[in-house]
Image 1 (cartoon, rainbow, N blue to C red):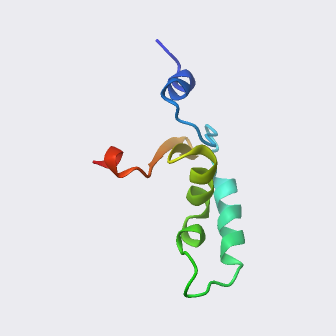
Image 2: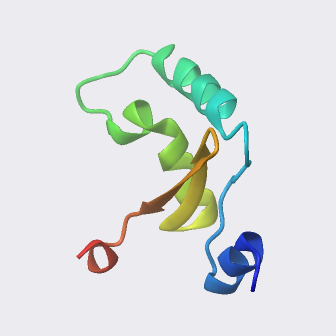
Length: 83
């Protein structure tokens, strides 16, 4: 039986996965920083609404793993995989 982390690495799924406490502190800080800046109508909205997802996709790729408390969340941004 393989461990969860070795399965993730084998499948190439990367991300800021922090078991138990999750990424909640990091997400809160990213949102606080994003909301502190003014937003113009012409600005791209995704980095403002979901700054953590936007950042992690740019760092780890289109498919990444984050953690909300003890629950893992797989972020998929490729339409073929969503189908």
